[in-house]
Image (cartoon, rainbow, N blue to C red; front, side, top):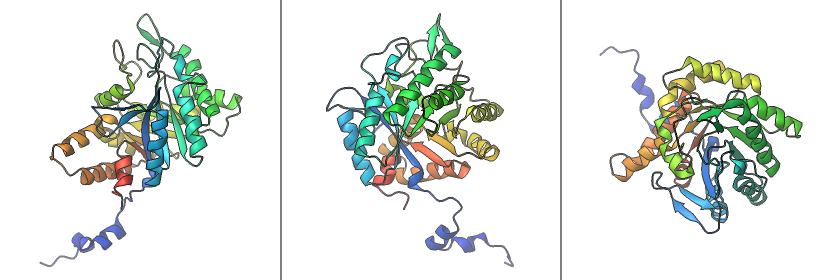
Length: 324
């Protein structure tokens, strides 16, 4: 055949394919999430998240040390307190589980980038992300507690705070409080476009943060909406967000792409627990090749426009050198 254009010419060898690849996977751009609980020598496997555990602070240090040896650079912390109350006091307790974990990690691994989740849901008895009154989640009274949480985490040594609650105005409230307390250099990674999603189920098992009544659709976004994500992102940028996040990732690649095209700041994507667990369970059953599937999924997220990805696959990627 008289073909002039033959795209297959550039697919003839692995060296050539690697040379011209448009998306390069970079382990330095991965963030690993950890669930830290009270007590000592505690390790509870999270059944719905194979390979992920709830760990006490001593085991957290051991796990992070091992992961650093494989190349880990950045972590995201979630705290699981012994006691919960209606106002989530453990979230902003100076001696809370997250604050103690931050201090311990920064003392042991000063070069590690420690990011803290800023939310109340793991610490409230009702499981919602804000103050509840008569069955409704109150937006404005919650802002002060979120800001207090962020300041307490920064004071403990957090390198970055990440508000995940989806209250209106929380980025501005946190930015103002951080600045007033002398933490002008602490960046905010905002969960800017966070959707109400069925993909969060395993995380709620891990963190014990399922709502005790109702759901979170009055504050997390409707998965049918795309333009609303742009609006939420712009609002957070106006309030002082340094990095904007799209969550979940895999079913929201179009949102990642739209956000990447409209902003100049870095874009993060959260490869959430349900996405992780589907792969793990399918791989365990022998239905898929885990390494190839993880590489394909992570590549799609970066290809869509993410500059960094939070993923529970991070440990396996680093340990097994899947990005080689």
